Length: 482
Ligand code: C2O
Ligand code: CU
Image 1 (cartoon, rainbow, N blue to C red):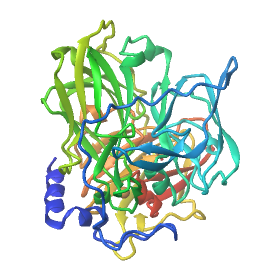
Image 2: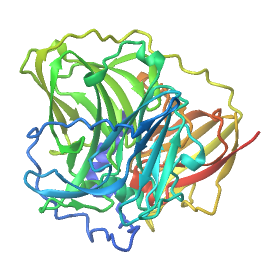
Image 3: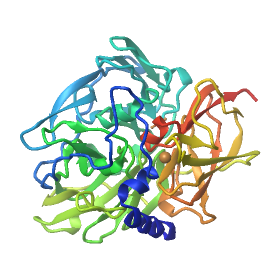
Image 4: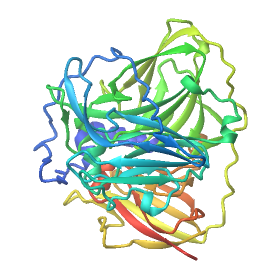
């Protein structure tokens, strides 16, 4: 909390841009994508909020099913959407929509995604949070060439949670994700379904991200979050969402490249957090605020039966708010609807924490001289394996943000538990299964990671402020037989 106040002071003292980049001219990762000469982009003015309805991404239908497997087709393609009223915006998508369609999978049933890359650059689809072998992990170097087709196979041998898929092509992922390449992948299982949580149309994935638009409606791209003043929710600018007066399960994902959020309802009312990145919490956590850094997911239940028809409730952002990023969306409460759903007092049992045998330390910073993203002073190098981990081992990783700007830390394949941040145990809503930990300026997060999943080989860890990962704040490790 204190460091957040420090951060706000810093933002105020330096102007947002300096605090976000460290005052650096950030190197362009592609010769055809030059960053703006200064931090002042010629961006379009703000779009009036709450003018359009929030769409719910459509659920992708399988092209076929067998007794064990659902088969999907999901191509990478350019599409045109409307963000600014009356203007067209060309985006890069999965399946033609922004965000891409939601894949709904069941624990124990395999999903096969067949994908043709129909854009003019190499891509790599990463299913974020999936327990999957390296060949299907969609790593930065494992790219699908323009025009090529490949399949990704996901065994779904993990507990119910909200995953998301996004591009991970080395150095171009930041721009690809920014231009639209992401979508939800919702995994359910029998024990979750037995809980009776809100389901069907009352279980709604919500992708929240920022963007910058030029006057003609086209996307503006550089590596500064100050150039992304417009909030999009499921692809639309600060929309409204008509809800019935009953409970809703809302699966929030921060799909921004750089912007961390902290959400609250503008009436100050509490809601229940029921899940984190990688599964349900042991018990619901009643809270009035929810931090979510880029890539993180949170599963919440909001009970709108408390409100009379006609009530409007704005979802606010209280972290580094500006006059365009302080409001995310608005819930417009309508008539009641029958509601047999419930939020039981016990949701899940977390696996026991093993005995750690190895401690590793990671420090995160952007190089003040070059703008390169550094972990332990080094930029990502595809020819360097940073370390090996023994399969089955339990390790403590200490991650320090030695910068004056926010970072976070994501590990492929595994989930982990946050032990403490600057020595303080995490808030109850951060104490579940995670695959990203937020590390604000000056913070040190200690996490405990178990490498118990049955896969060997090459995996990645990186800052999930995707532009930082693209600038080199990433490393790779091999899981080897013990
Ligand atoms: Cu969500 Cu390595 O990424
Ligand atoms: Cu970072």
